[in-house]
Image (tube, rainbow, N blue to C red; front, side, top):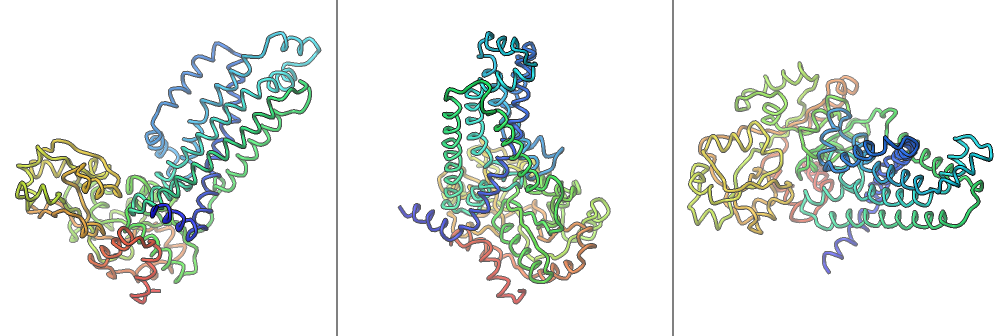
Length: 513
């Protein structure tokens, strides 16, 4: 009952936020639906006319349909970047199968005698197609559109993983900040949108099944015009044809990054008068944000020095802050990007063990963990298992061989530890939930993990265009300690405060805004 009240409260308190996400969700899914109607309908007509192409075409579309959505998004990123464009392309690919199949099936079920009758009256092939075949096939085609549209609206929630908009932002942000009410609210709105769309298209489908003269109302023309309108409106609105001169901020899917994104927006808009927009919680973190910076999709994002050294510059040596001049020089020469505004806190990695396990095996250091690892389950974020300074290197340095590993979203780790689904996990030293967790943080007795001091990476082109940004960002230099960052994270993750409210309170307290 309390959770239901929390969901209702969050709807009331953040109605503007949910309206914005709902509109974005409809734009993304609407663009994909419109494109799929046009392309899928055309493909269905072609394979009906050239029947030998039907099997390979449907087989290819079927194959694309079986690719997991995360894999599809990951495949598209190198070609189209992160954000709305890749999301719409991926959703369109998934929407093609029901559209192609419904169009082909609808046309194939028309009695040949009716088609021949239309031709015998002197009609051209195009006339017969548009005045006889498509009107007769429209009930079946509409059924495919109905299924496709409902599925696309539901699937659009995954778009936030690559920095696109929509209600998936609320779901992912809720998971990241340990806010189940926000997650449920986003999920509930997606379900409502899908059900409303299904009901509306169900009414259209029923109307199309009513008896109609073959040469009567051009229903196919209505459907085509509607699809074209959806594509045009969505394309223009979503920025396929350009982007405004706005400072675009990106953040990783971590609570402190959501807070810092809000800090950046507040400081930039307060000190420069520029408009700042945040793409919050981009899935994959640096792996997806840095290419977005190179392509000009993003202008600025908070990064960690050790991550920049190993993941971006691809340096194999362990990072320490004495290497900061080389780090900044590498960014400037290779990517035309600068580090501006070093916050002051160092969010390095740590290893936490369930207290019960730590006491059972008498674990205090990473080296102690070696003897117990074969009986334990290790959990971490997806990217930690792939990092040069991540899981493989950690295991090699300390001789660790865990019984099992589990990939977890950063917002679910502490819950998994509390539920005894994992025994050992990677933590960040500024984690808000760490102080409240029933866990012991082990000592890195060999100094394995490098320094991860946080600062802002900014495209040089943006600094040249808006030199006032430099002074604004420098106001954040050395303003946040490890303890202050942990306290802000705790306020969001355990006290239910909003990242923006926490950021604003901190900036006011420091006299920055």
